[in-house]
Length: 325
Image 1 (cartoon, rainbow, N blue to C red):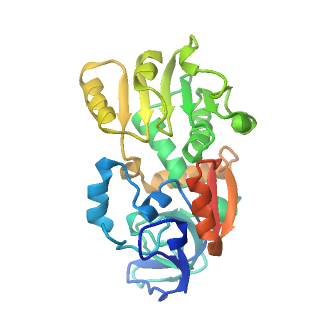
Image 2: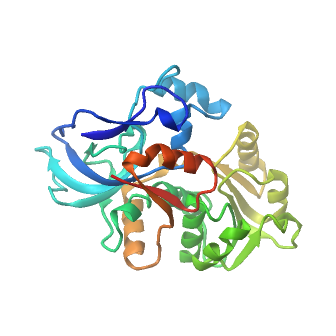
Image 3: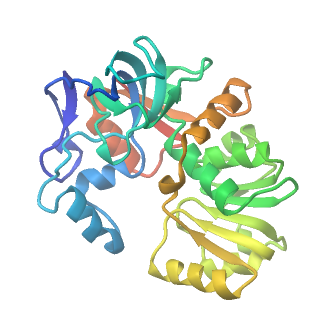
């Protein structure tokens, strides 16, 4: 089968399309013929071994310091089940599914074996395969932070920094679904998009400093790690939460301190540890009801995977980048 393989860390050109052995499902696995996958912001970091200092040691131990142990990247997928192991009960050949392969990676390929119990569910009927492949990583991260960590509720005032990214575009729509008033912060060119997906107020960070405004929030969600912790905590209402997807040691220490002693919380977490199949079911449900739509910036072919990585690395993507397999 065809796959995008990399045998050393480096620039996007280390990704090469080649033929590898097609997997065979074990007794409790399904074989998914992958129609689409994605390039998340984390994928280029794995390809180039470009991780924050806190993560270099654990990532190196798990996936290799000198060269990658997992040579096929990709975590999000959508496709059709081609075969099932003899103990599989919930799926059958022909079922259209979407899901997340996690740390086994492997979705930059034509086929992937996935355990029946994996984070996978039936594809939303109203979405294409490319759209379906992008409603896992970003939306589940946003859902975990807003619902499980911040306990968002109707009437909350929520500020989302990095509102045009994968997590940001999902967070806006989910916050509106939960009944919050949403302020999105993005660049000039993305203001109309952010408004179109539900933001009540939009601030252009290149022209206005939101920390100077006389407004307080129940939740401030920094999806890109570019805000000032001190200023954001100041803008929180009593019992407010400051959410960070990109964090360092000082944020972790602040999270522990505010958890114990303050009525304003700094919250950091590796959100994928909290993802459940019922979360995928929830996303499928609200998507089919027209209450959530993934934002796709560009769609590349698998043969263009190096170009897709280069585009994501540029930092200019809006929403998600899909890969058609």
